Image (cartoon, rainbow, N blue to C red):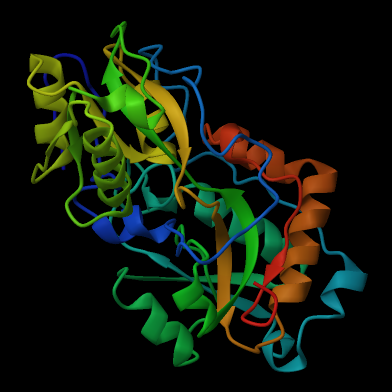
Length: 333
């Protein structure tokens, strides 16, 4: 969609948390699951915020993609049936969730951090990336049907998915609060939301987190937050600008992107998407395909050579960087 109000002059796509609840849920973790390897804190105080008013992220679609080179030793471990055609068939998501997966300004080129990471891994494995787009609802079916060899779609590791899929982690998964620039709040802990009016996506993991926090506040005799649902992110931003809400609780990646492209908002707090546990975003494979191990090895090689960091820096996701990619299966969650 296009939304302008004198402050935002670029095309704004539908962002995670409301219009695409599947993406908002993508990084959620089952309470019984756990994950490790994140370089950042799972929860805590305010982040550095954002919102210089100048869009530092290039969304033109003409920029050169960061590339890597083949690692013969790692490439040799790719299962023969996957390597046979010389391609890595990558499933990702249609729609628009910057900076993860979205259309460039030309309305044709698919760009974002998910695509860049997949391209780097394909390079390292010596394969040509064959990008296929689908909806959030359909990627599990298509992955199980063998239409894709891997999915890059902000998918979080949880117990239910481990029953069907294998994973190789590549990013931490956080939530954050979007607030008006200079707001005198310090959101980020359960007690901090008391008495505030907060927008949150209906049926999302972040709504579940805030509902739990409200229960804790009520049990302690404190005023809970008032939670509000909106039909679009544009409505949320208008409500935030007019003071009808105090904050918007949504995925860190998309909220920091908004903050980086606007003068009037910033982020506060960083909460693990699997709160009270941890979770990770991971490349997702059919269970038992044998690709998770070489994939994790490729990601670790990309981390060592610095191209992984270049991609996350490019999209403003340095705070969700990992120090190591790990394989997660039902047998080794």
